[in-house]
Length: 213
Image (cartoon, rainbow, N blue to C red; front, side, top):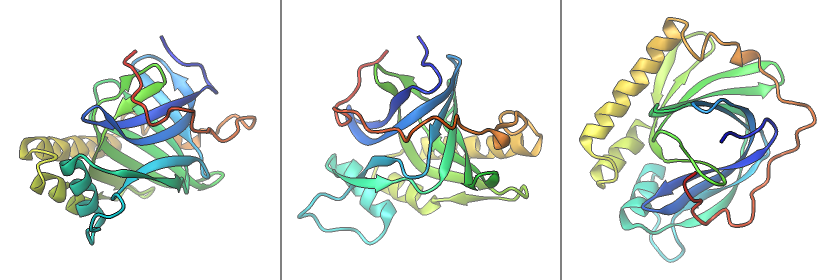
């Protein structure tokens, strides 16, 4: 079963059968093995943070890795800061995000290394794995959050073998961009949302793990 354009779905990041983060998104396209999700600026979502009463690590990577390793975190309200279309393909260990600073002004491409998406009764589930790639509009690229991945490995959240797989995955996407392959040659940079769409909102029960679909 697929979702229809304009429907609001819940994208949950999950860790050890618990919700790690929750984002409401609008479905732009759902073709079964390919999904495009709209995450507009101003959307309210839930992000993980250090629980009250526990020492707060100095860096974001250490904070997140400690929460995951100790299997304990709290949620904080967050507001997304840039219009973003998330492109996910079945089996890929990444999602490609295309973002706009203003209508028609592309920010660039963001490769989010993550677990392959799974369908749920609420929408979709995955898990962010810290490492990212930024590809600028001029074609230059760079790694992002290398230190966070190192913290995940140090705390046993990600094993060294998976960390290397993520690096290879990131480089393969950079090669696809260089060669003009999917999704970089498919017109997504010029995509615009339906003007009638309102901001997606978190549903009741966003913090409960949605069942597999």
